[in-house]
Length: 108
Image 1 (tube, rainbow, N blue to C red):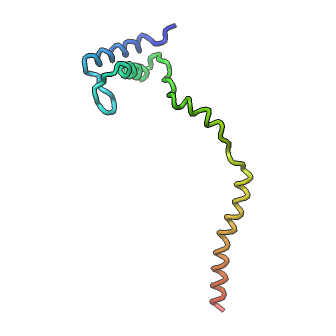
Image 2 (spheres, rainbow, N blue to C red):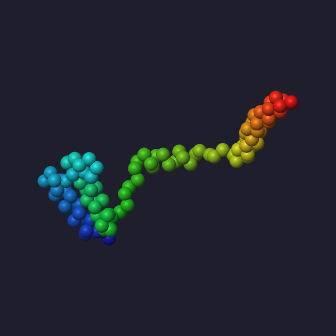
Image 3 (cartoon, rainbow, N blue to C red):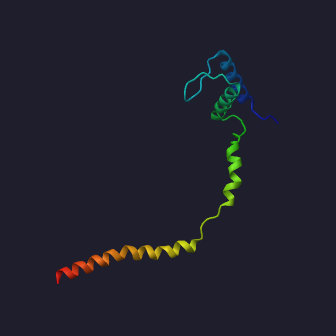
């Protein structure tokens, strides 16, 4: 079974030919492409857009290394968050009560 379809192979061949002629340019910056690997990547990307059979993009090396570290972390227990909530509510209501007491004492 072929890894790439005939359509994707043609796209890669076309992009390599353009790179060798000096006509292939990158999408964002518009600079001339001189790296053959980049030319292949452009050809495969174009083939993907047209729906050709192309394997998925490989994950970056940094993502593979970072994955085990993320599983080691644990979330904070939920009970601690519930205990903190009433304290905050009490602090908020205290200034209002004090303001009411001051205004009541001024009225009399």
